[in-house]
Structure formats: C-alpha cells, structure tokens
Image (tube, rainbow, N blue to C red; front, side, top):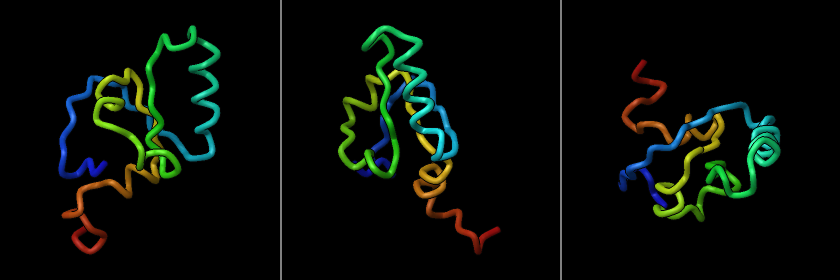
Length: 82
C-alpha cells in the first residue's frame, strides 16, 4: 500500500530500531506473550509491500527500522532543503 497518500488510523505503539535487531524484537514478542496476544506487524522493506490497511489498523505494535522511516519520510524534506 502507498501510505503516503492513504492515512490510516492506528493506535499502535511504533518501535523503531536498527535493522540488525529486527529478529530480536520479534523473538521477544513471541517469547514474552501468549501466541496472538499482541497483534503486531513488521513494517520492513522485505515485508511491507503486502501490508493491508486492515492489518495495520488492527495491530497493537508496529516494528520498523530507521532505514524504513528515512525512506518513507516526507518527500518535501530533502537533503538539499536543510
């Protein structure tokens, strides 16, 4: 989905971390909570193209990386405008 043009109401906690720790975060959720107790979604370059609006809005946690935040930022804020 193109999230830039389609705002989604979402009350999820956004967790941003270095790409290298993605598997650690997912493992901790799976270890610390019962299965399906915490609906979460991984918003990462390998996975985000198939995310639906419904999945995003029903998640309690969104896991993503600094790289994805940088890539999906406001296109009006470029390196040249600093």
